Amino acid sequence: MILTSFFIIIVSSLISVAFYTIVERKILGYIQARKGPNKVGFMGIFQPFSDAIKLFSKSLVFTENMNSFFSSLSPAMSLIISIIMWPLIPFSFNGVIDSNFSILGFFIISSLSVYAILLIGWSANSKYCY
Image 1 (tube, rainbow, N blue to C red):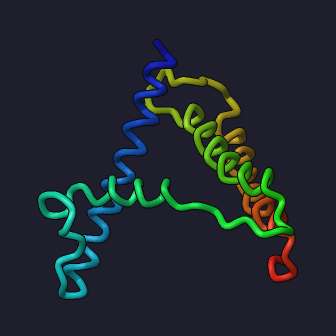
Image 2 (image 1 turned 180 degrees about the horizontal axis):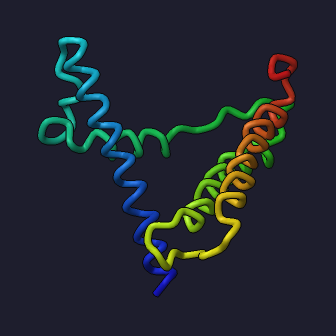
C-alpha cells in the first residue's frame, strides 16, 4: 500500500512538473507579446510530451578520451538521488518515512547531487572541464 502511494506521488509529481513548464512558457510568451508554444496539440497542450520525446531521443557524443561508464552513470545517479528524497517529505501525518531526522536526511541526500555534476565533468577527461 505504501509503495503504490509512493509510486502515485512520484508519477503525479513528474507529470505536474511537465505541465508547469508549459504554463511557464505560455506566461513568458504572453509577457513577450507572442503566443508561446501552440503547435503541438490543442493550444500546445502536448508540448511537454514532445519535449520528453526529444530529450530521450538525444544521443551523447562519445569522444576517445571520455569515460563512457561514468558519463552514463551520473544522470541516472542524479535522478535516483532526487527520487530518494521524496519519501522524506511529509505529505500527510503518517508519511512514507516517519522519522525525527527527516529534515537532516533531506539536506544530506540533496547535497549528494553535487557529486553527480562533478562526476559528469570528470568523466569527460577534457582540460576545459576543470
